Image 1: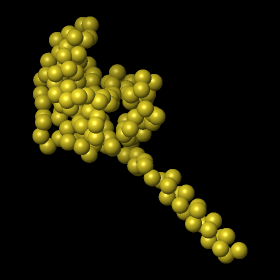
Image 2 (image 1 turned 90 degrees about the horizontal axis):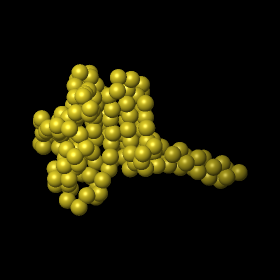
Image 3 (image 1 turned 180 degrees about the vertical axis):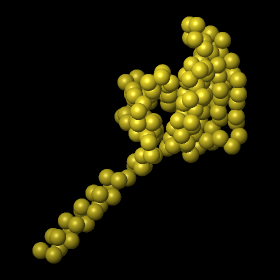
Image 4 (image 1 turned 120 degrees about the horizontal axis):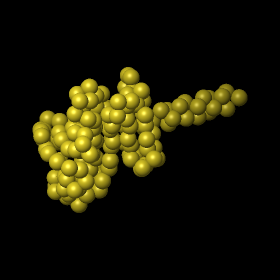
Amino acid sequence: MKKIMAFSIAVLMLALVLASCGKSDVPSGMKRVESDFIEYEFFVPTAWNVDVSNGFAAASDASGRTVSMTQVTPESGYEYYRNHYMKTLGDTFRGVTLTESYTENFQLGNVPACKYTLSFKIGDKEYTALQAVGAHKYHLYIFTYFATVENFEGGLESANKMIENIRF
């Protein structure tokens, strides 16, 4: 009887340990974005609406501020971002301008990254976007936060908290 009880307790403890593996604690004031399509942990403020219907993680708040996290498998790493991705943005939106870039001492979660700030137009509205681009294993991850020019600064603290808490 003691052996059965000890075995049962050991199995229960193993199950609890395995159940806790793989997922980190959720940062204060945030919720986890969950999808079978993403290979990273991504957190957004609890009040934001999450959308994972397109195979990537996206969320927005009531004012229209939006974030997304995309994963691509390019042939040439950061060169892909600079040569292909930026060209695609320019073909899609009017007036895309790179206004700032930081390539040193910046991280996307726990991986080295580059940070870019862009401006562009959709229709008559002007937008600002922050993009953090990091490589992990064989993928390039692109975090994008964008909002109208007048709403951008108000969501920047939340965007930076999301960037800091991405986990690969």
